[in-house]
Image (tube, rainbow, N blue to C red):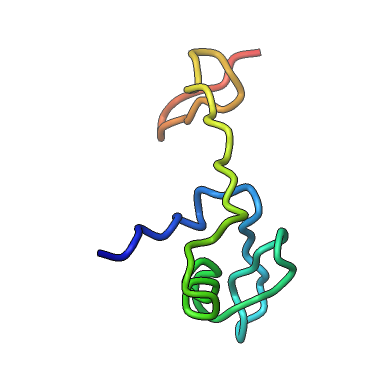
Length: 78
């Protein structure tokens, strides 16, 4: 049974290149790709990506924090 591939979007090395031909990139392996980098690595090496490093989890936004989402009709008070 094949091993599960790491999810690139959850990796600190993954980035979006904004290059229409090669939209996904991996900073650890220094390449851009049309597909998710972990798929390219698995196809080329036969192994799952060994450079995967999970992104740190973000704390949920608390009331009054700048990250709090405003809804239509909400007002910002100074």
